[in-house]
Length: 164
Image (cartoon, rainbow, N blue to C red):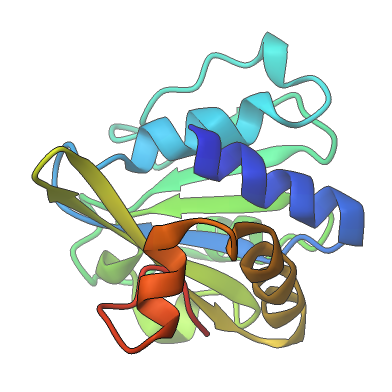
């Protein structure tokens, strides 16, 4: 939840909202991350964040409005026109779980790809920027997280936890 809130804080400071495309196994933290992100937005306290597994999309009354997708059942079939348009809605914050199940050509170009892993003692998130907005957000996030030892280890050539 803290990482989701931190990324939103950076986005709000920059007034830049690239899509957040989330991947990782069951229980890796995708929906928990989304809950933290949504709660960090104005109006987020009114949103009941849950995985939209059965209907592909939940909409939350935040500012900006949040579209929360779950593509687990999609299994690379492609999006219909309505979902494609919703996924590319420029005035919304887009958060998509199981983004790997969506065809890459259907995904927003400017996005942060966040890959969650379960590790001994907790969870890990690797963040990768795609596009100018996402790169600006990741640069600012990197500056804010540079004091954390796990990030410093990644910068020194270890397993990347946050990188571009």
